[in-house]
Amino acid sequence: MINNVRGENIEVTPALREYVEKKLAKLERYFEESVDAKANVNLKYYNDQESKIEVTIPMPQLVLRAEEHHQDMYAAIDLVMNKLERQIRKHKTKVNRKVREQQADAKLFANGQTENDVEEDIQVVRTKRFDLKPMDSEEAILQMDMLGHNFFVYTNAETNKTNVVYRRKDGKYGLIEPNE
Image 1: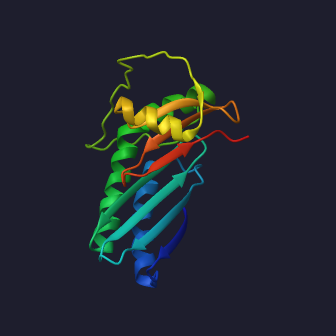
Image 2 (image 1 turned 90 degrees about the horizontal axis):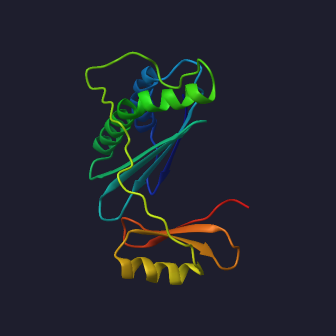
Image 3 (image 1 turned 60 degrees about the vertical axis):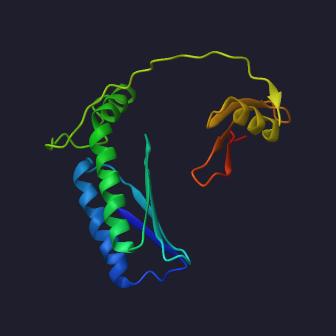
């Protein structure tokens, strides 16, 4: 796995980089050898003495992503790696099944089972249908807030494409729009 480790408001020391790389190397046991993944790691340090780590591993069939906050950067690294491991164990059977449907005999994750592997069926328990009204993102945010939801799907009045606005964990808003 190729690692891209960068820091914001923090110097990525050789010891810190080595620690991240050592932890990421432990994730490789979950993958087939043919997987060529690049891990993007962003280390941040805030003035209020809080550390944050974001790890994104984009792959052909999925993107693994996790983030953690902690006062100690090394503890944040441990927590985020545990979160990524749980994601892999939880979803590896479903992802391998989807990959096999698309490419015969292909697998993303290795077959080795661990005692912590979890297989849950993804089940849609409710379906909603509605008309997408053309509007701008500001109106969509107002609609979302009035409905008490944390996301809202709408048709962008300018582009006539489907967009999504959502409430972020920090209380601000995000916008998802398709590539042209």
